[in-house]
Length: 128
Image (cartoon, rainbow, N blue to C red; front, side):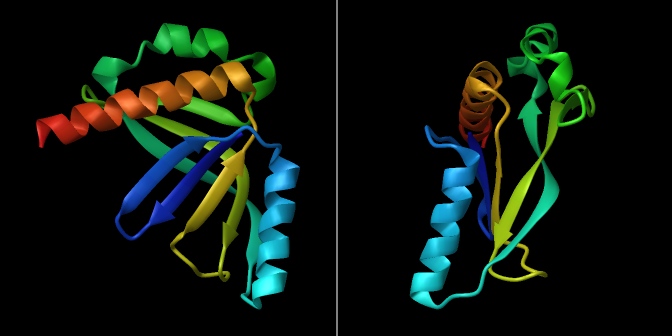
């Protein structure tokens, strides 16, 4: 499962060894037990990768046809590639800009996307 967390400071992508359903249930239970509100809905998320770290042919080869309606990868310009996917958005309320989007895309795709994101982030950090 991939977990994309949006915060005021930016975003962070994690790969977790837990099912999507188990993660959502755990978040709901945490919310109930702590008395905090929770909002859960189907949604889409996107993040950018630096184009120089992405082998689009390899990435598209690990994506199966069954993911075509759930995941897209498109070149934005010479420098960036956008990864967009659907999943479950979890936040404190309906209008929150901070929250978490979780999705299950399969181990191989998740591993490769997470690896590319880490490389891309280190490239961006090093460049700044």
